[in-house]
Amino acid sequence: MPGLDKYEYHKLLNRAVEALPKEIIVRERFQMPKGVLFHEGNTTILKNMAEIASKLNRDADQIFTYLLKELGTAGEIEGERAVFQGKIPINRIQERIEKYVKRYVLCRECGRPDTKLIKKNRTLMLKCEACGAIHPVAGKIKRD
Ligand SMILES: [Zn+2]
Image (cartoon, rainbow, N blue to C red; front, side, top):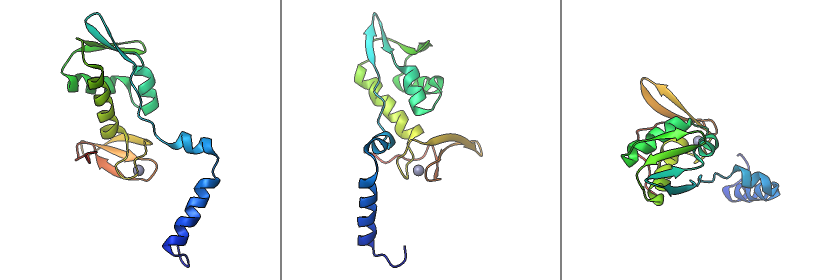
């Protein structure tokens, strides 16, 4: 920005952010989806599978397949919920959901969830609609 030093620019930016209505800021901030999880007999239920999928703008099947592979178990989707075989510790499933989000949903440049999975030369890529960045999904993820 010509004629504006970095400090002034940041000051203006802060003022602009402060001027935004609060609900816009809240809506724009990404919130990690929380699984509603419990044990039922010898299975583990993810009650809000469909809700998580729609929040992430991904197929429930795709997320579920990932979770099954990560957890090394079998299961099936029953309507809105997902059923895993065995009593799996609740936090293990939540951890895998978050891992999925970091790998397949969040842009590694800007951290936004407005992304799409695309295939390029047979490689699965994550394309960010917010900043335009494209990364291979199999690429390294920054540890947090
Ligand atoms: Zn981005």
